[in-house]
Image (cartoon, rainbow, N blue to C red; front, side):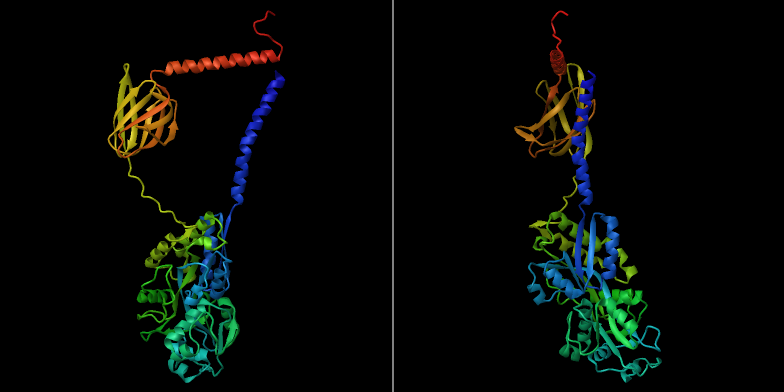
Length: 514
């Protein structure tokens, strides 16, 4: 007997081990199955995207964000070549770029910023040098070459402008910041528009090239008498001096969040849908007394059909990407102000959300439309009696049960005055071991909500046009005693049979005299 008990113990332990091991392995696999979202592009929004990278870990610990700040041109290229999950650009796609894509793209404005004319001029230690658009165009065309040029002196009579050569600094690579800057210069100078034009990359008439907003900012800080263009956030975080620029209303405006916000409000562009062309959307040289004239959206680029991109190889990754973007354009906007970006207006957020609803993976919407919640039900009670015993059924639904009948050994019949989802609690003294719920000849799906020693709660839907539901089970009163005796008898027979088997195995014969 001692050996048998030990064998039984090992058998139970083995069963438990087999049961637990898959759960443990599954948990480990889940813990190791994180998703990384890879993006590349504009340096303009990099400080904000990098903040999102950190903050989103608190929202979705299993989703990591990796973003390469390589410029809008590089972001568009990698997006086109499908080597990243999303691209980022300050310049909307033009017709040629759109035609080169392997699938339809959508533009999602992620933030709003402005570009400043930053300078490093000895003798002018403070921000506030006044410049106009035409003067800036002439400086970058190489026509104005000295800081004490009469045109600059006329605007700044109280500043000690030095007789030094102006060192122009511009972006060396394709850049959305360059697109915004050259778009502005094209708006205010016909000569610039004809000779150079606008674009993420242009043929510069003069100047030094540097990589990224960071590179341009560093070059300006390290080079005396330099001037260049950088995103407002870089100028503020690095303490650079920058010019107040004349706007369309003739006011010299300091680049700030408020003046950038004013440009967006004054422009109030009729924005296209996400999948339409954004090539003509511009915030530069906006109307308004307080508008700073060099403002811009910055965009995320996604494929409308995400399976176009082999980097997005599962619906889980597609959903993770869309969920992140959805968070970035809503909750993620709360970090914009502190980093010198303008949060997206509600109008733009709503447009973005509509764009995200249209994004698919293998033809199916990534954002599932959530059906409206069902109306809340009201409790009801219905009672019947059989052989002097009362039985009460309770439930919750938008309609009620009007009658309950017990058909012994067959079913419990409930009559309703409506259709839809219903939750019922039935006493086990009336019915136990519920197996089937039927409306006429139709078997209804039902869910076991809970079970206690005294009652069973189930949930199902009464079909339209039906009012009577039959519930079948292992026991319908008054057959409980018979079923219980049958189960007991079966158990006794099993015990006797097992005992005889054990006795034979041990050489003990039942029915033999000892």
